[in-house]
Structure formats: structure tokens, C-alpha cells
Image (cartoon, rainbow, N blue to C red; front, side, top):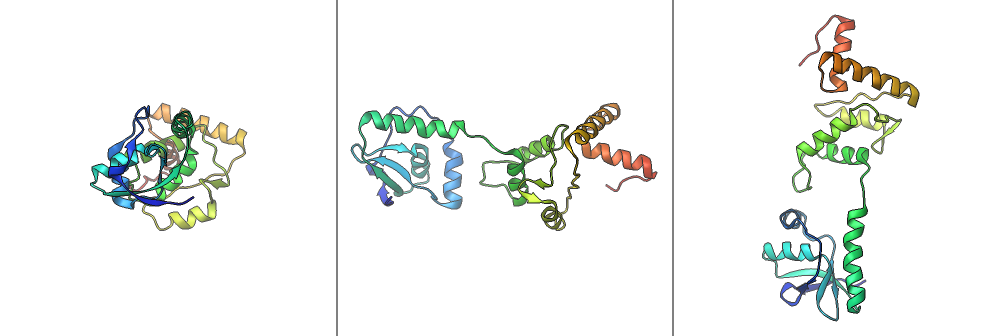
Amino acid sequence: MEIKEVALINLKPYPNNPRKGNIDLIAKSLETYGQYKPITINKRTNEILAGNHTFQAAKKLGWATIQATYIDVDANTAAKIVLIDNKTSDSGGYDDTKLLGLLDSLGDLSATGYTDKDLKELQNLYDSPGTDLRNTVMGKSLKDWQETLGQRSTRIIMFDFEKPRYTWVAERLEQFRNENDLATNTDALIRLIEKISGEGAPE
């Protein structure tokens, strides 16, 4: 598929596009990383079938041209392409453990569409009862995690349980958290170790 550099002035947004995009976020991405995938244009009409919001973001940044591919389709097929392009984005999901691992590996989340708050919410989700900790976590082996986290100011301790035992541990931790008004499983484990050792954990 040939990619061409096309003048924005020659292109038309698809008039009945039902999708509402985050122009500011796309503009931030274009400004930071440049354009890394082309938009799709109907050769018959010069209307944008995929990438309408990328086009609008490029205009907002004052770009004169944009990378595009062309297809030649009738109006009915064009409408279907617009719909399926939007729907495939809506229908996707995330593997939260892989997402957490990817976000946590970056340090700086600027121009990713995610915030430190998003990362914290995912961390809290992963720390909650019912999470399945496995030998492979977030696409890495435990050895890889130990090497990665060994260079960071924060650490993660991984526990390997068969599911029935993990469920039992998670339920007991939740009970202990509730009884002691603790926010996370990490807080619960620290409190338990303090009780056993008779020492207070460092700040």
C-alpha cells in the first residue's frame, strides 16, 4: 500500500462521521512523536474514511501536509469502512497486567494518554483480592522483574500460589485490612510483619 504526502487543504473530513475524538490528545501525540500511521482517503471524493481526528489535530498544529493512503470505493462501502474503523476501536479491550507493566516501565507518562492517577488505579487493582499472581506476571518472568525492579526506588515482591491457596490468602488479607482500616494488601503485609518481628517498618 503506497503512502503519499498529501496537502491538508485538498482533503475533506467525512461528513457523517459519528465518532467524537480527543483532538487535543491526538495533537499532543503528533507533536511529540510525529505521524506514525497514515490516514485513509477515498480517492473518489477526497473524504477521510479513517483518521478524521488525526486530520483535525494536524490542522490544529498548523501542518500543511499529512501522510495518507488512498482507496477507491463507492459511497455505501465508504460508510461501512467509517463504521467498522470506529467499531473495531470500541470493541477492543486491555490486558490490565500487561498495561500496568508497560506503564510502570516508563516512569514518565507524558504524551501517552495516561496519567499517574491511571497508573495508581491499576496498581491498586492489581493489589486487590482476587488478582491472579503467576510465575509470569505482566509478560515478564519473576527473575526479569527482580532485575528490573532492583534498579528502581520502589519494589514488588511476587508470591507464587496455586489458586485455592491464593484465594485463601487474599481473603485473609482482606479481612485483616478491614479489621485494621488498611488501604492495600501491601499495608496489611507490612503490619503483619511488624507484629511478628516486633519492629516498625522504615518509611
